[in-house]
Image (cartoon, helix red, strand yellow):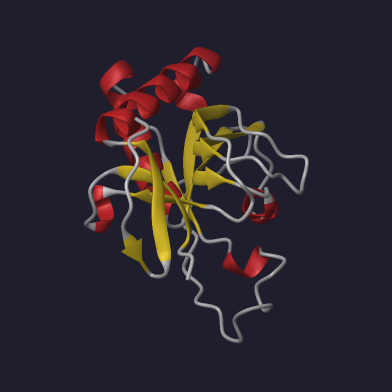
Length: 192
């Protein structure tokens, strides 16, 4: 959906709605099909959501996989705060959540799930942390939105939407799990 909206919030103006509720559902359904097509044995899968948006999306993917194949794949949660290369740059005391993996990742196919892929630094941090828990057979990346501007050689394997953005723009993913209507919006700073 590409409806334009203007709404000030936290000094940001909505420039364009990229996905609405139906678009998000459609993107996740397509991603689920792609995941199952490339992993013939879904029992080898482990979904790991990167806090916070990635966790909600991983839960939704898990539900869609269960609907398709009748199997609830293990679901983990990863907080990459202390693995970020900018952790102390802007915050003197970062808020650190927990990482919870439901099973060993040794020899498993891990699907890292995040809401937006931008520079690749969050994914890099997640990969470094994941290796502290063992050596999976493979790691794939699933993102709802790939907005480009990579600083590292990281590419997603499963993508809901590829959006061309300017570096200074912001992609906001709003999800019902956080009490918001499902939407993905391209935003920019309000001009004085």
